[in-house]
Length: 163
Image (cartoon, rainbow, N blue to C red; front, top):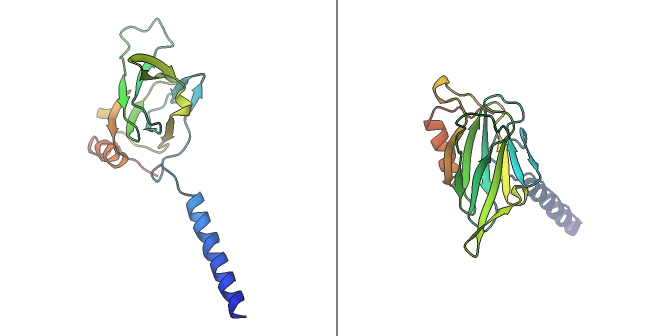
């Protein structure tokens, strides 16, 4: 009977550990996989056009670059919105423009090469984020840092990451 108790206890412990591990996420609390998509090789942020906040992680082993791809050629003086991201690092992006497209690039043999954003990025959105009027718009909030530092930078800028 004692052996059965040990087997049952170890089975329950294994079950609990597996559930905890399966629910583990690279994203911080409140950041959800919503509000963005991938189209061909592009990352497309902000499906609604409402003021939004996204966290983006480079999960590849290469330095990558982002470059805004303007889908509206008649826009006057559109900002460049470029950024670089080292392996494992994070960036935060705020946007009030719907369907903001980004190309992803890396360098191979000193040549700039387009890569599929969906294969190298983890992205999430804080859908209940609150912005002060002074920091609304479309811009890189914080770039190329550990996740905790990107979140601290965002909070210092008055962005409330509510969950």
